[in-house]
Length: 527
Image 1: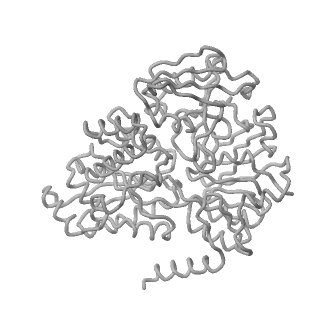
Image 2: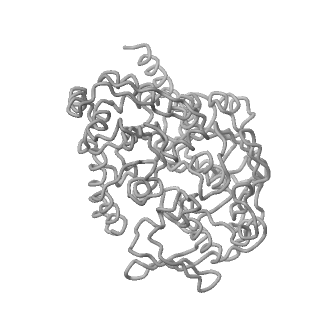
Image 3: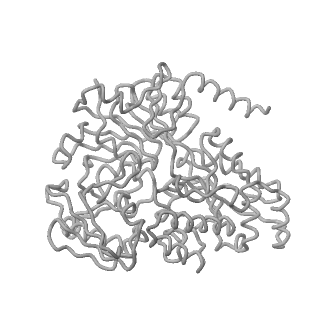
C-alpha cells in the first residue's frame, strides 16, 4: 500500500471510529455522542431570537447583481438578500416563495402566479407584479448577460392583470420552468429602484430576510436582519457576519477556538477532521459536480476521437480518491438521483488506456499538449484534481499543463470560454433541464462555455423540456447523457458532499443538497 493510500485509510478509519456520518440531508454529526438529527435537536429547544452569527467561508462573493453571478460564493450571500418566486424545501421539492400559488392552463402554455401580498423590498416599497415582469424581462434581455436566461426563453409574453397576479405565456410546455424559478439567478428586483437610477452591481434592494449592511470585499460582508420580512418570526438572527478566511484549515481552527460560529467547508479533508471534534458537522450529498471541461473549439480538441481518448484514459474513481479522499461517487452527466444514467451505459466510463492510445492514433495525434485552468479556492480540490489528471494522462503520452488562477480571474476566463480545458465545479439542480439546456443547446447562454452543440442534441433537449411525463423525460435524458459521453466535450468526474460545520449551540439550520444556505433564516443561537 502506498504512503498516500495508507494515510487515507487511517484517516478514514479514525473518522469512522469516532462518528457515523448520516447521508440524509438533515443529518447532524456529533462525534462525542450518538448521531443526533438536527431537526429533532432543534425541536427540543425553544428557538431564540437575537445575536449575530459569525460565519466563515474560503472565498468571498464576486459581485452583487443576482442575475449575472455564477460563482457559488456569490450565491451563498445573495440568496439571503434576494428571493425568487419559488423555493426548494429540505427534500428539494418546489414550494411557494414570493409566489404563494400557481396554476397551469390545460395546454401547459400558460402559467399563472399568485403573488404573496404584503411583501416589501428593503427600501420599504411594496413588491408587485410589475417588479416580477420587470425582473424576467431583464433576465431575458441579452444585454443583461443573465446567467439564467436560457431557462426562460420559452416565455413569449408576461401580463400583469393586477398587482398580485403574473401570467406567463409560453411558446411550448416547459416542465422545468418551476424549478428554474427557485434559482438565485431568478431573484426579484425592484423596478422603481433600478429605473430610478440604482445600480444592482454596487447596491442591493431585495425582499430577503437579510439586508446588506456593509461589505469589505475579501474580508467581511455584514448582513443585518430585515425586520419587515414577510415570513413571521424570521429571521431569528439579528445579523450574519460573513468572514472570508482563504484557508479552510484556518476556518476549522477558528471554529475550534470559538471565534467562528458556522462555516461552509468544501474540502473533505477538513470536513472529516471536523468530525473528530465536538463541533456539529452536517454532511449532505451534493448535486453540484466536478468536471474536466474540454474546449471543442480549440484545435487540440476539435476531433471527437481526441476528446474521447482523454475520457477513456481517466480513472474517475482515482480522481475522487485522490482529491476528495473518496468522499463522493463517480457521476453521470445528470446528478439528480431520478435522472442519473447507469455508468455502464456511458462511453469510456471504464478506464481503457489501450483504447485511448488507439483513438489518438486514429486521429493522427502523437504529441498532444494543452493547458487546463483551475481556481485556487473554488473548489479547494480543483488543483488536486488537475494534478491527478495530469499524471494519468502521461500514460497515453499527453502533456497537460496546469494554470492556477484566483477565483475572480478564473470565472472571467471561464465565462468567456478562454481556455483549452478547465477543471470546474458546476451547479446541479433537481431538474436536469436547468443543468443541460444552458450549456448544450445551441441557443443556451452558457453554450460558449461548453463550446459544443449539435442539431440532434438540440432536438432532444427541446423535447425533454416540453415533456411532462416523467418516464418519457427520464428516457430522453438518458439519450442525452449517452450522446454527451460519446461526444466527450467534457469528462464528468464525481459528486461530493456539502459540509456545514458549526458550534453545538447553533440550531435550526437545514442543509440543502444544492449547497444553498437559505435556511440560515431559521437558524438561531441557543445561548
